[in-house]
Image (cartoon, rainbow, N blue to C red; front, side):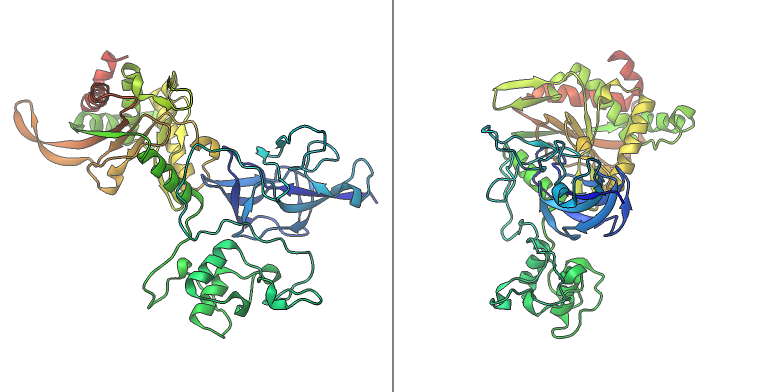
Length: 470
């Protein structure tokens, strides 16, 4: 019989210095045999939902965190039983996943040097300091934290049997001194509903108190908690609903506050007859070059933005406060604002300026499908240089878009409406939309913004104009 050893997998830094993630679901259970790179969990960062692949081939020994837990980078989330190729005993092999034999991920050997970040599966996990909290990368943002939001991870629990609903105790201690097992969002919900967790029977794994347990107790005190299908605590007769601010929505809120109060916004509007653009789209839909792509005014607007940027590069730049420099990009990573069930995200198409219209149409379709499925990766959400938000799909004509942090401009597309319009010296019914351009007035002055908006409008009013601009 071959020797085995225990390996721990610690939550990695999933990109951009994120310090915590929420476990949404486990795709495996204790005792399951998994292969290398098999998806074992789905987690939500402040930017996206990410699938975690297994760093080992072996057997799941223990799941350290339950769905709903907010876990700090560097904390162990799952243990594996794997073959010991070197013949070490299980006790010798136990420890965290580490690229260097004998070192645990998130720990630094005592070499007299300052701690360094250790490689991990997806990114680089933060070093766990003596206090037990991971070292945090310094951020430029100064997010406003909503009062009362708990961000601590689930408290560590010793590996011993726990009866559902019971309160763990140690010899000689008052069993009421310890808090029942629950996650931070559940504790917050219990506080809001005035529920004493020591009176709640936990129905989750190992006696974990779930959101449904708290909601059921709040509505039926002293009775077994029944199934609750509505999240947020909403039931007939309640006058308010409370939803924890976390994940994508929390990050978006902080980013928008930072953008609105850092970059001086200016917004301009232009109403355009886009009848020729819609006629062109109707023709393109019959072309095999666009097979599988969903064509819409957004498709042509995206191309118009890319062409107009060649004549107005100031709108494809950012303000570097630290170095007191204006950075002008020689490429375009085109962001498209996407409304998802988890909140607003702005994934971007890398090097969109190098794409022909058929490629761009396919990329826009793939971006939308990925965002709707909640599979946008952190890499897709970073590095954008300019963005488009299509508010017209909601029937809105115009607005004042807020800049995506770090970008110089964002273009809003309004709804296409049939309206009486001056056409060839007469009044005719035409297809009209309004463009809304917000820009950072530190980077873009009024003339530059107006010229860019006029160029985009000219292309949409007469697509043939693009031939005069390239």
